[in-house]
Length: 230
Image (cartoon, rainbow, N blue to C red; front, side, top):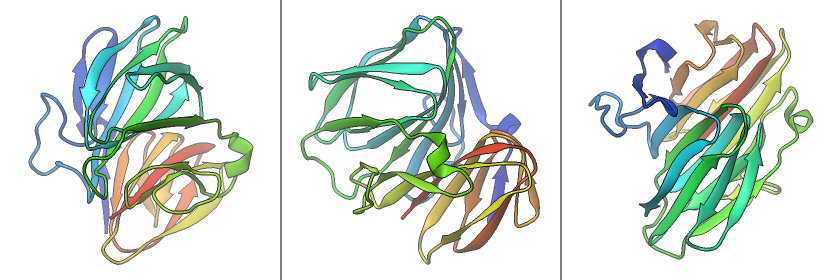
């Protein structure tokens, strides 16, 4: 099953400092046909203007993954964590029983990122945060696991039955991904045009994938983000 969700069809809200596009229902955007995909609840494509961002606000019972595409985001939270995550790198936050956090672009240029929410295996528990650089050379021509609810070496830990993966392909290269029975994958090319089993996918389109093995071909130099979840 391949369900293409063109970028132009996504929910959108432009607040001036934030230009947001929602792959699934979020905030004031409601589409009963796009409430999530398996345990993937949110995939937001955000552009945050220079020297602006999200002031402190609360979350609970959600795994929140931020993949920075360009620029950088600076994080602070009620646990005392502070950190800056740059382009191509990832931060994760397990909201658990409750946490407050702020995300600011303190750079002198716009920051673009994907923010992904995945439902946790269990509610509650102490909140947590982590961030890590992921050199793009390590995922050249292949998927690298960036965040995982399993024992995957080198990945940031999350408390969900899911893996967040990234790949960088040169034009003409391809990778495969197999979605197991009962699982759900969602793929977005952050850069480049691709084909999934011969179906054309433009930059920043979403692709919902059901059970099966898929071939992903890069028409352009491409940067891919994929979540495989229950």
